[in-house]
Image 1 (tube, rainbow, N blue to C red):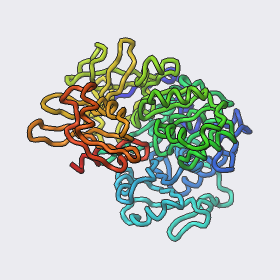
Image 2: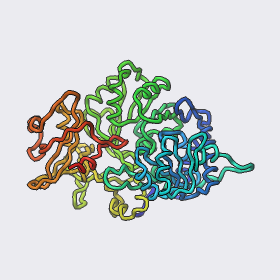
Image 3: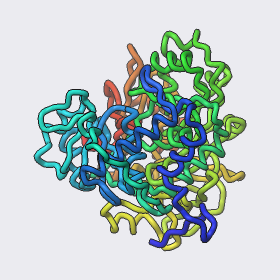
Image 4: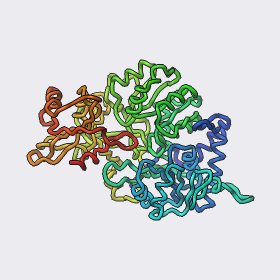
Amino acid sequence: MQRHWSGARPGTPAASLGLAAWLRRVAARYPDRPALTCDDDTWSYAELQRRVERFAAALARGGVGPGVRVAFLGFNDPQFLVALFACARLGAILVPLNFRLSGPELAFIANDSTPHTLIVDAAHRPVIDAVRAQLPCSRWITCEPQGAPGWESLAQALAAPAGASAPAEVAAGADDVAVVMYTSGTTGHPKGAMLTHGNFWSNNLNAHHSLALRTDDVLLNFAPLFHVGGLCALTLPGLQMGAHVVLQRAWDPQAVLDAVRAHRVTVSFGVPSMLLFLSQHPGFDAADLSCIRCITVGGAPMPESLLQLYEARGVAVIQGFGMTETTSTVSLLSPDRAHAKLGSSGTAALMCETRLTDRDGRTIAQPHVRGELCVRGSNVMLGYWGRPDATAQAFDDDGWFHTGDVAYQDEDGFLYICDRLKDMVISGGENVYPAEVESVLYQHPAVAEVAVIGAPDPKWGERVVAVAALRPGAELTLDALQAFARGQLAGYKLPRELRVVDALPRNPTGKVLKARLREAT
């Protein structure tokens, strides 16, 4: 697939686009500014750069160089970012691993990406030890201070022989791969999206443009760094701007409120479920949120009631839509349009363009006609690691990435994401979009959360199934649910089966695992 990069003027070196290069320049410009805080430890930009250079030397001594993969498994940790920039300095590639995965799932990713070096924290080393014999790694580093049998401690890895010098920084081109980030794998095996230095540069521009980031901003990130939202929505754009990033090891509502108070956080990122849980925390009503300029939200549209709750506290909400394959950002909705365009994910971000296509690949120009969302731009991945077949299937001849998401545009060109193509239910020859049905069922007072899937049906081909978790003490029957929804949904869209569960299965980013629900049919 031919790639075209428009981020630099023809004839100018692309090396400045690389992650290591821009961090080095930011550190030289703001050496004493706080760069990163985690727990009670704060590093300046100069300190972060020193740690990057030292760890790059340690990786190089172990055999890491251009194109070599380094994997990281652990909760959010400053060492993750050190590893990212150290790999970039060497021309190597970081492979972030999802800490929620089981040993066999991690083994699949490791054997797919073949990392030379694996870095793991104390909490997840036992998971790796259980499958270590299946992994292709040559070097094993643990973040534990004392190390462990068969593992180097971080201190041991950093110990340099006398006279050793840091390796020279490798110039990175826009299309050089910086990270292989694996998709969530809600169906089948995950695929590794090859994200380039140019992709990160473009996504940072998207964030700077939409959030108006400043060097005096304090950005709070509690989303996992192995996920594109946690890494790309705020963390990397903030570091490129010279802002102060406050990193939390895991999501915890009390810790969020504590960080807002202690650091006077100005910008944060989350998914709607996180903001809902935060608003339900006993300390939320009394918390001083006046320092927060905005929160950027992805993963799902914000319910209007939740949007109004945060607006009443003076917090602007910037909604958007993104994917691993697009380095997070595809479209953004500014706060001033949040109510007029309720449920929309906005319009295309600065560095990409979108279009909708029908089943024959023709562009849909009419408003309110559903089609597949396609994206093209310098923030779109290079392709899938080791999967030329999947890459060819995902991109058309004009370079458009086919997302697999169903969407429509309104008369003003604002995007509304409807569903995943693979989740669509075809009942009696009619297309049923689960998200449309779910939005109605969520309004039932007994429903706490609900997912709609299809199940085989001898008469209709597929029948609509509602899988619901109920509010405490509530009861619900299929007849009652149908009666509630009948005035808002066509008859063929009504659930023909109701399954009540304690909770819906979700992946670490909050997405419902519909494949797991379908497996139970």
